[in-house]
Amino acid sequence: MKKLTLVAVVVLAGVNAFAGGSAPEPTADLFSVGVFVPGVVEGSPTYELLVAGVERAVEESDATFRVVEGGFNQAQWEQAVTSMAASGEYDLIVSSNPEIPDIVVNVLAAFPEQHFLLMDAYLSGNDRVHTVMFNQREQAFLAGYFAGLLDDPEDGETRAGLLAGQEYPIMNSTILPGFEFGLRAVDPEATVDFRVLGNWFDAGRASELADSMYATGTHAILTIAGGGNQGVIAAARDRDGAVIWYDTPGLDEAPGVVVGSTYVELDRAVYERTVSAINGSLTFGEASILGVADGYVGFVEDTPLYERHVEQEVRDRMREMVERLESGELFLEMSLD
Ligand code: RBF
Image (cartoon, rainbow, N blue to C red):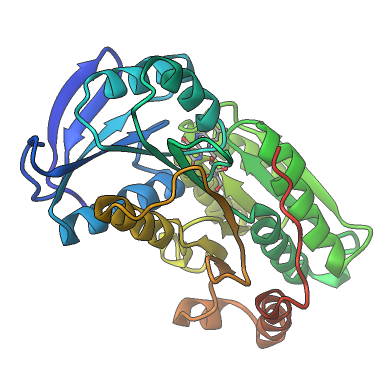
């Protein structure tokens, strides 16, 4: 993520807020955007995309924004969002994660005028809320298919790992099954070694878990664990394993170690919608789901590191599969819980 010029201000115990970019302090005249990050930005690809997209929208418009990090104590999030709404400071509060709609509905009961734009979330028909969900079944499927192609058929069984920061409905109903489905598209007998870190920050523990996965026959691990992702990279270096990145194009994270990456253009989606909200043209009450055929989800192919570290045959088979999704010939339905 591009580093912002940040001014730290503590607004709530355990919750950090900072004013972003070159934008001045919010004033009554300018459209004001508050970004609530359910966690911390650094180390979480999905939140890096969120802040980058809003920042770009605000920079290009006459608007201001402030980022509030909710931290890792999820029990504090509702209070933090309530405080943001109660301040009356924000024309729009932007946030991201599948659990946020429940919090927002509670906050709206007390502050019914507040408008919200929620990414990586789904809530239809609430006239204060616009949501965008990404097709994580397709995204995880691509990661799983790639993991399967990487596995050497000479090894016998096909096995790949998935490390999640925590278990949550979309992880269990969509991401894990999508990953497994992709893996089994290569080898119907393949198995997933699914592990849960229990938080979104502990790189030391993530490294231990990844180490035990690599030691027991897993060659590639898809890591969706926030700050824990760095621990997976460390274990992969020790064990000569492979890492698959998820939301941001991740091959640069550790060249030759992170060998594959899916991407989601959450930054573009939130940019477009924040601009619409500033212009007064965003439709609240609307909920969309964007996938590969819409151009918002994909697999990173267009980079020299991919060509350098992944065999031509694997790249060709990946291209064929991505094309099937892009053309709509193959579509994997996203379940919503
Ligand atoms: N993903 C992260 O990368 N970092 C986080 O701190 C984080 N916290 C989450 C907290 C909750 C309660 C839930 C449901 C999901 C969280 N995610 C987090 C996962 C995120 O929403 C998304 O599914 C993944 O980042 C994959 O796109």
